[in-house]
Length: 323
Image 1 (cartoon, helix red, strand yellow):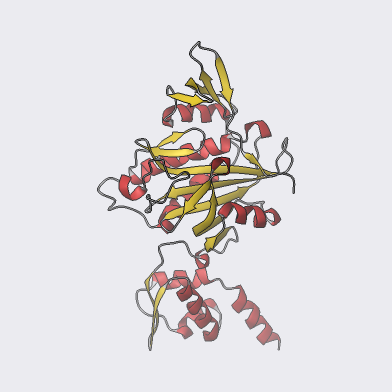
Image 2 (cartoon, rainbow, N blue to C red):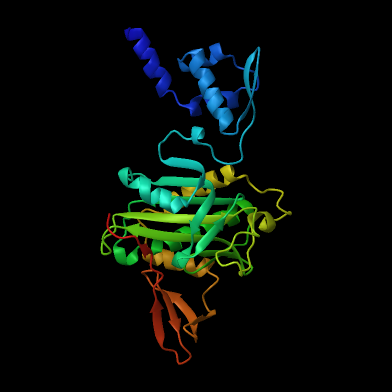
């Protein structure tokens, strides 16, 4: 009886990601017996893992000689990550909603919530965010380490870091437009959203959402009347080096993680000056034109009216209220 119980525990504890990695490393078929021996589980357990991988989009050849991996889905799969910090679904109302509902129980580490599609994606100022297949939609849930007055720096630093990463890895000439947009040649490539929960003076949770257009630029707009673009159109060479969504996520994930820790306000401001598309531009607020002069240390935008009088415009995360 003890042997059977140990076997059951062992089978349940083996992650599909481990089995998947063995299939990736072997171009020749691996039998259920061989895989079971390597992983210390039964052939029945191996078969269950194979069936689950197939449901997630992995094409696995099954023959007399065993199992062989033929192709993988282009979207991240739950079975590839066993850390408990990455949560993936095909369709949700919004990844922001999923994160705020589920991450409060376990938010010591950054939690990522991804979806292929959003039925009610959220943009800034409660605008809807159309999110069909063909984009990268995610929310990172984390515990903010900055004082409440500086919490908007998270969205600015993340946006700037994403601009750098898209330039470095894919050659996209991207700029950050305060307070939360990514633009290429005056066309919108993506956007960020920051929401917090808990007391306004000391939020205990924060949620940073990202919508990045990869393929479906026709649908990727908050308002329907803004010029938009997508990575496929902006990568040099006609998009030949366009990454699949899984590769893109794995490229940007560490960039987002590094932007959500302790950051220095002055370094963020210098970074903004180098990567913004806003400084020196004229923007209209309440029927008055202002010229963008600088970024304040708390993330507010410093602007001047026609007489040179300076004002600060706060980006402000959405406050979700105490929980």
